[in-house]
Image 1 (cartoon, rainbow, N blue to C red):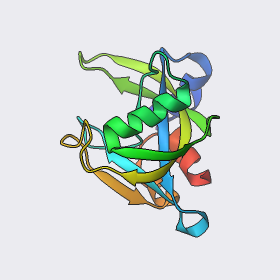
Image 2: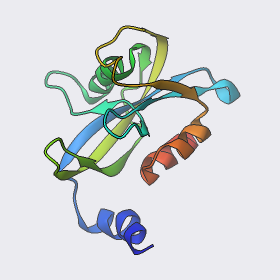
Image 3: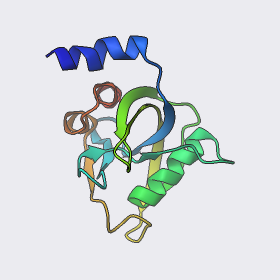
Image 4: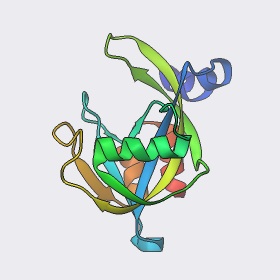
Length: 149
């Protein structure tokens, strides 16, 4: 309980994130028929949004769409230029270190999914309703964004 209080309340107020990432809420449908696409992380196989580091030469929303292509095979129909919101989380790096990341989340309307994409062999994909997605992800800030989407 103390760890949860630190992670969700105290830490965000006193510690600035080390890095910034961009993420894509990839969606199809409207209203009650809307679904969002979750993918598994490569290492822990947790359900996450496609996300990654900003890309030189691309706006943040375009970088989020690029991550959606590389990690989930998303071909975008429309990319919202403004973020829906942001959330903080601790990313475990390859060397074992942990960095605090502030992640901007962009809505990406999906035209279609490709079966062949750069990380196809490393990830699973799943379409779910936004509220179900909120229950599947770990980060409280991302849960809140998905619940309101």
